[in-house]
Image (cartoon, rainbow, N blue to C red; front, side, top):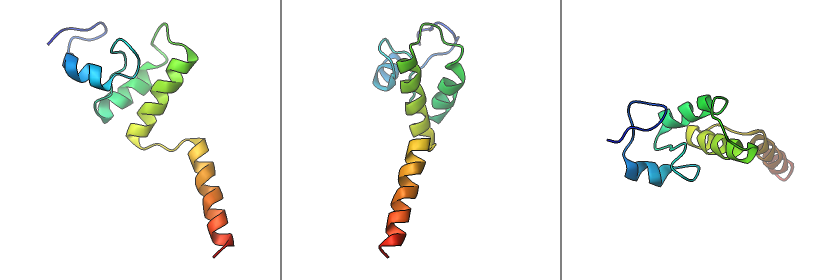
Length: 86
């Protein structure tokens, strides 16, 4: 396996390309442990735009099953509507 900057161990290049979040193989997330690591590394990462950070955070939260504020609001609105018409 090829070394990558920031770590002595690496995931396979083919897996990195398939699961990359940003172009160039940055922030690959083949599993939940990589998603957790990505969330922890966002503040330390250099050269990321706010769009890049949002994209990484969104994908990691999706993989981990987190609900965002928007999803919670949509679910509660749906449940209120369902109760109203029941």
